[in-house]
Image 1 (cartoon, one colour):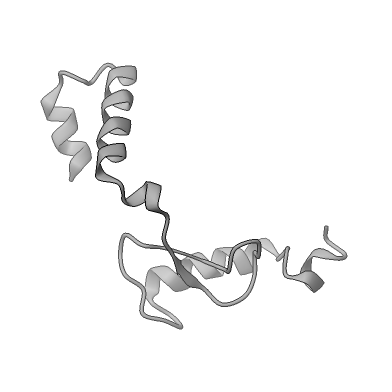
Image 2 (tube, rainbow, N blue to C red; image 1 turned 90 degrees about the vertical axis):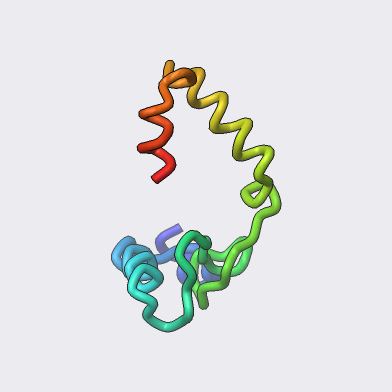
Length: 88
């Protein structure tokens, strides 16, 4: 999509995408909150950044279930020290 993508807002140069991440990190061009996700409007890769909200990411029960599964898969389910370090 190098030829058409930029014209329809569906493609950008890697350096521009990287700059967007750094801008959010440093708060350039907006009031960004740590722990939130910022991206262009749905189905766009370019344009102004908006806070993205996804119900599945805010569901504490799903987070705990995912943490439990990952702990079991990595063999750290019973290792409280590694869980405490990961939570920090």
